Amino acid sequence: MSDATAKKEERRKFQAIRGTRDLLPPETALWNRVEQTSHEVFSTFGYGEIRLPIFEQTELFARSIGIDTDVVSKEMYSWVEGWEDANFAIFREWSMKRDPESAQVLRFMGPLRASKPREKRDLGPLSQNTYMTLDGVETIARFKYRVALMDVLELQDAGMAYQQQGKAMPQLLLVTVPGTIPEGMESFAAKANVTLEKIHIDDFEPPQLLALRPEATASVCRAYIEHNMQQLPQPVKLYYTGPMFRRERPQKGRYRQFYQIGAEILGGTDAPAIDAEVIEMLMTFFDKVGLQGATLYINSIGHNAENCRRGYVAKLKSALEKVKDKLGPDSQRRIDTNPLRVLDSKLESEQPIIAKLPHIADHLCDECKTHYAAVKRQLELRGVLYQENWRLVRGLDYYMRTTFEITAPGLGSQNAVCGGGRYDGLVELLGGPPTKGIGFAIGEDRLILSLQESGKAKLAQGRDVYIAWMGERAYATAIRAAKDLRKAGFSVELPPAEQKFGKALGQADKLGAKYALILGDNEVSEALWTLKTLADGTQQKLTEPDLLQFLRNQKRVSS
Ligand code: AMP
Image (cartoon, rainbow, N blue to C red):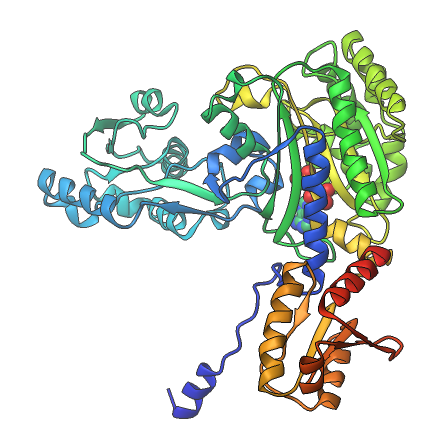
């Protein structure tokens, strides 16, 4: 590398990763205000804050959000932990002892994947490696044994690769550590040409697939189970705030690191009043932060039974089959994978077709119908305005009955600021007891954007008081004055070096200060301080206690 290039490298500018951003003052003051309001409002409804880890096992999300969703299959930031280092060495040592000849090619293969990526590019570099080896069937076939830690799917894929080439699968030796054997592995091994050998290794920490959280409901449910919260008085009401991560295509209102404020209510009953109160709390919060033009949409998606949602989905599917050729490729695919999701489509050309599809409300069972009617009545009792939207669905089995969404103006196509719904099956799905649940997640980035667009975000920026001091004696007084004013809650700027008064006042103006406290020798010896109101240039002389009182009164008037 030439010196010049090296210098250039050195000067390389780092930038925030696409889809992430820095939040800067004064905007961060608005973020704080929004979060503070959530603490205040949610606590008046009896919710307590939960702080959760930012990464969890990938499988937690795969199970709760669903393997076939975009969020899990395409958008998660996940990685394998405990792969290369200690575990690899342990396996290598073990395999060398066992079969020195093949030890050269022995690999400790394939992490235990939680998702089912079917295409190579969906896999991390590690698994891509695995696939490359598996594709090179000849390479594998040369060896009698392979020592591998694979998962069932990889084995199945390998089997298929051999079959396609008209070859028998070679005998595989699969070494696993008890406790890490994936579901279905033993029965698969029995059928295929696979010898499963379980070895015990002290202190073995199985490799884990971890992911940055794409949302927090699953984590809240995990924590509910982990900390036996079902033993607390039910329901348990929790809320959280923090960053979430999804590898989406960035655009206005859509980021790869974004922030949510969410709440979950777990346990107890599924009384319609609970659904209505969650929504009431949400609308109270939006009102308090000053969000204008928010619209609440609600729907009921029944429950996962033949006489309710399953029956509806079957009808929807056959209606969709009839119009299949008029739909785009995404919707066509969803007819088989998840027909309800077709209703989410924003594609202009599909709108008239979707409008004619059957509505779920006509297919709800009696209990779900009654529940939905009661939720609406309860909302009315609470004075919460809503609109019904029969197309508001959630594509996962454990979601049931109430779903809701809130949109806000000023956001373009990404206009949903909040989504929520009832998910009575989720805690059980994650290994806990049957537990009722309902919750929501607010997109904080979008909420802030909407507040800014509506001009509701005008913040009193700048300082309350700028202290313009001159002279050593005055400086000592200035330090004390700054301390007392800050203690009384005022924002104070105390310049670190002496400046001429003219310059100091100019600086105060630039910082947007409301007042300049002028402290020179005269002020100190007379014990009368000069306070200049920068907006109109008026000046007054006050004793220290009077000055504090004056500022307090002014603050009360303006807030
Ligand atoms: P979801 O967890 O997908 O139900 O989303 C709940 C809310 O989070 C949405 O209504 C959005 O306001 C917000 N949200 C979801 N994904 C993003 C993203 N990539 N960027 C910004 N906000 C998002």
